[in-house]
Length: 235
Length: 235
Image (cartoon, rainbow over all chains, first blue to last red; front, side, top):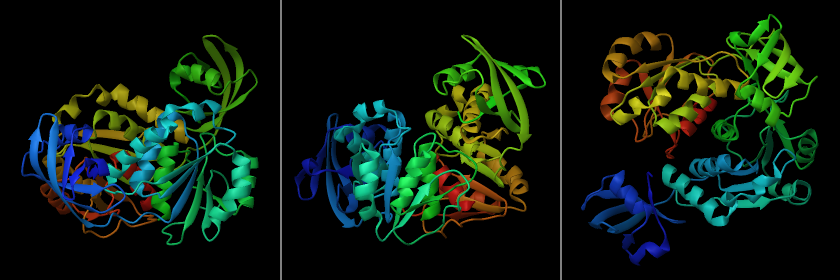
């Protein structure tokens, strides 16, 4: 936690917050904070700034806060991600939030096991929890928007063309394709497949929606690693 | 497991192997392999090729194997990594093996907790297990070389200059530094710090050993994400 992320319910006045939950525990156990210490804070969806610890008791801390700094810019990216297996999903959500992805579409694919859509980790509160961990890690305040699309074909045929319009559309896909471009400034729509990859039919439909396959070399990476590698290379 | 990685003990003849362990279970449960199926195989430290499943019983499988293809090239890189916390260590070892890092030095730092050096995950067999998982994921056969350096100063002062000689030496470090370069062909020595980063004294010593700080932007990434992002950007 490199940023103490504050929500509206934490505020007892415009410049005062009281914490009682895991953030308090973290402040005590990891930061070993003491009264008078300064901490970096952010207001969820808003500015970042500084806090001074005014009072620290076993179950409660009070801080004076001020906000003066915008959060870091997001990437100009919409990420389409074949729904990963539940354990991987949690880490990927942290990774996309930490790396500054503003919009993620979790998408079905032939190689996504049906059971993955039943995981409690897809509940809005569970998704939000992982995104917050990513924002706290990277020092950002703005939650990415996460959309679930359980049916591949209607999404790709009917809604994807409008999303990709005006962007460079890319499919991260192993094979004999051009290498993934580097250091772009333009907006990108990037599709990353499931373990085992998109099937040819899916690549075909994504291509018709305006995306083109690009590759990262012969090595097959886990989804979480592929996400970090593709984003770091693109931007 | 995208590659069935074979060791000398698996061979019952030059072109025959028998499997009885987790690789058999994986073949059955995940690949749902049947007699006659073809699978990608690699010989640990050697070539890759194909196997045909000759015989499949509850506790044992026999395969005919042939090898004709070199493993993918490694990155021209020596990675110095402040020892991560045990849980992260395991995933980072998989990631570096999957991404093709040939040499990793796990290094002490002021912000590495002493207890991290006591973890059973640093035992040679445990390290090897994670590296093998990374090779199986990425389809590679050559184990990275992992070295442990429990004392920062003697390593950086006495041994690091010889390692960095003839390479571009970089320190991944947040702050007001030049951006990390992109798409290099030359050999690199890259140092990645612990959670919380290198302390100024350490950056100073690394700099004297020929490394220069570079940054990836304002976002603070977890070690595993930073490794993937830095490697994908550098090469």
